[in-house]
Length: 327
Image 1 (cartoon, rainbow, N blue to C red):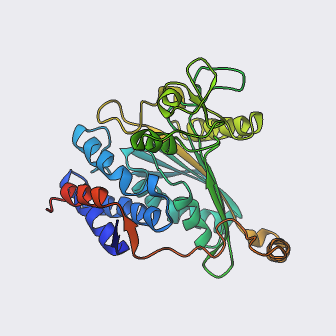
Image 2 (image 1 turned 30 degrees about the vertical axis):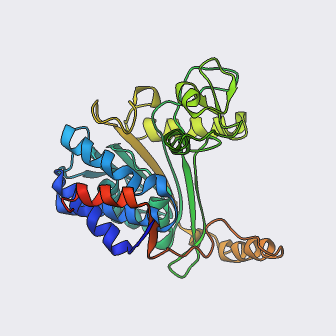
């Protein structure tokens, strides 16, 4: 492991993406997301994805030179057509309009359609919270989850993220979680490391519990809390695909495959102005105070500080530098 400054991670990531065909401003938006993922310990969404981004830029599976199209079909709704490019620049183009909309209307929705996987959904809801608004976001992914009692893959891990502002430009609460017991990346990383997975994470192709990551990847993941997680996954599926015009999970090919059709995924966000209620700030303080009564307990995401520098696997860093055209 080697300690690397976030600025260098961001710079190398941007250089690698530009070297493989992305416009500079687009590469910069993706690089910021990669650096934040590394800084929060979310390695699955960090440099781990960079090689895939670069290969798919070269194959044309993701477009690196498209300008997202922003429209406002209704006063409190902003829609962005990502045009099969990266999710991060599409969100960056739509966010200022969504912020204007929530300020004017109290609530607003932001639909990001036809993009590459957004990886860390909390990266986006966190930006909304730092702007002073409550954010709920969701997306879908390639099919890996069967309905409870079934074995046919229907939906993806379909993450849901929720961020709450602290009133001072920071975040009081944030969670970002798949609607499965674990994210798919943890299964693929376990397979790459030759490790078993805990029982309860996945089922094999016959619908039986398995601790073999390879069997899990041929089978399906388990929804968190059974029917409860399945319901949240369906909610994310319908809003992410239905409200953006993007594809359902059943039509998404493996996300990290070099070739194939574009991901064509959607993300759907709800923005709420906490000032709609005179009580919100006080109630938030009451909840925080109640949680703090137990030593060691805290709100999800409360007090999170981005690590800088971060420890990066030597082989992964060498690969990133190579993708950027450096030795």
